[in-house]
Length: 125
Image 1 (spheres, rainbow, N blue to C red):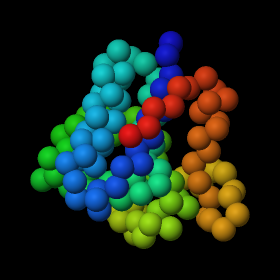
Image 2: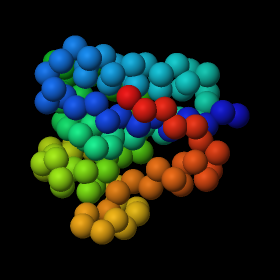
Image 3: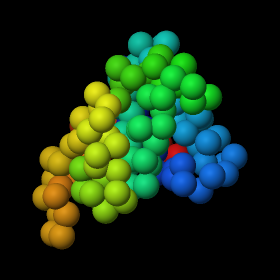
Image 4: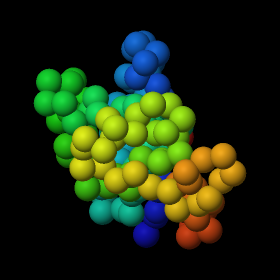
């Protein structure tokens, strides 16, 4: 069985169609792979952690798709949320803040190398 980790770096603060298109395409890929019963891990990293609060908002255009793939979400990077001012926003949702790898100067990050070690392919948006 194929295993895919999808990492969202896109920044909603860019206020661009490209940023929205990236998060839509990331979630669409997660949806397709989930339909095929493949192992999918959806990860919010970097400025992508800012998407979490927006996507859980019912009137957001990507909310329905997010809801359909929410069970594939691993979490949002804790250190990234701290750096990019999204910690409280993520905490207001049911998405976990993940700090599994100690990195100097941060509260910890999601260990993407773990996914590679476990045979996942990484796809970034």
